[in-house]
Length: 191
Image (cartoon, rainbow, N blue to C red):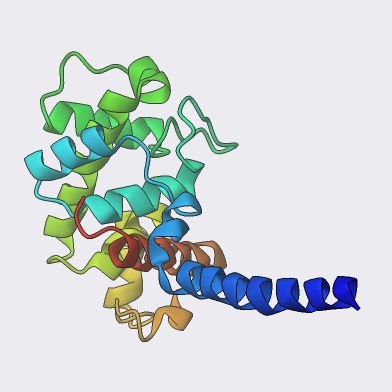
């Protein structure tokens, strides 16, 4: 009888304790930051500020492009953390007057890659009048294609009609970037 009473008392204490811990975990979203980390925060913050770009947008693009792994090169030849195409990177380096930045540094070094990617996102923001959804699509498919889609009425540039984006890859890309953007802005009070 004594052993049965001890087991009952343990269950009576452990079960509510377990329930309390579970509730604390589920209602405290801070633990989710382990699932949705942001790396290179200082670099992102600095360049986002310099180029007037939302740092959460940069972090979301990096998360989708490379999951924060530098020195990546895609099958199509996109370089580094933010997966910049060599032609786009070369053009952006000239326009941004970044003379000390090379394609090799864009591929292998976090700092120039984030700087160039931030400058390019700012440029896209100007081209698309601040429409972040169109900017995200243009970052993936190219601004010329996105402008044509909007001009020809294939897509109106809104999130509500993202299902109309002609390229499945770009449609999925926009959805993924915006998913991470939502997670980051919900989890992190400030960048």
